[in-house]
Image (cartoon, rainbow, N blue to C red; front, top):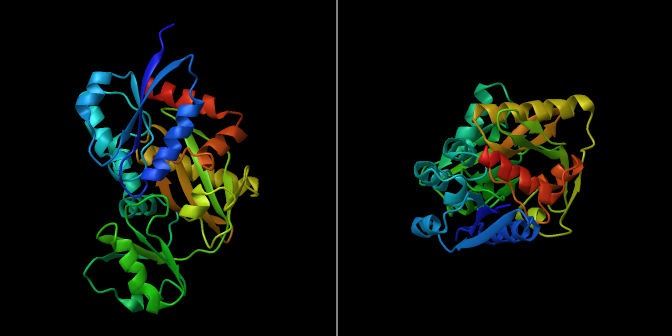
Length: 306
């Protein structure tokens, strides 16, 4: 049997470079060597060496890039234009998923609850009266970063300028939204035309919120799967996640994050390339559904080749 040639892309040189390498290493370690010939390629910056990709001539590209051009649809568009198959969402879904403003607008328009918030632009004044209307604790974050990069939680408006300064290190748009206190959960979706919702996972960070450390450093977060939720709330989270999958025309897999406020799930964001590190959520959800890591990788490849 001929092996499937897989080009494993990781790195990217951006703010999530190290996380991407961790995901890539875990993927490489868990691929079934009997089925696949895996060729790792580490991108040291945001530029894809398309000539090298064509020389390798993979059957499929496994994108383990987080953030930047690897997740915002840029690389997906290159592969689409070149007729190169790759795992996960296409360029359109990737672009929406990475742009939190666009994504939350789409969710709200389709009756999925979102946090109250506003958009702040670098160099423009923020109306503090409007911010006060959001509550007395706020989340400030860049509009297009993953892994909680550039996110600050504040309970004092005197700290707003510094929080915005942190967010603006990464881009010129930021979101200021109400801080929702409640259980944080996530739901993975796997499939193409007939997607399946994985078991909902409960996130119990030991830091103030599910930040970069909690996501990637062992011992900084506990996950419980299935989440300690009623059947009704669990079903609602899975339904919302499947609705998101359809709305953005996703493919392969996504992960959707929520917080439970007053027994109701409120959507926070979606991830088109969820982490695949040893501490990541999607593999834990898949395992709870009876799918070992190697089988999850098999399924991702199968869906890309359909």
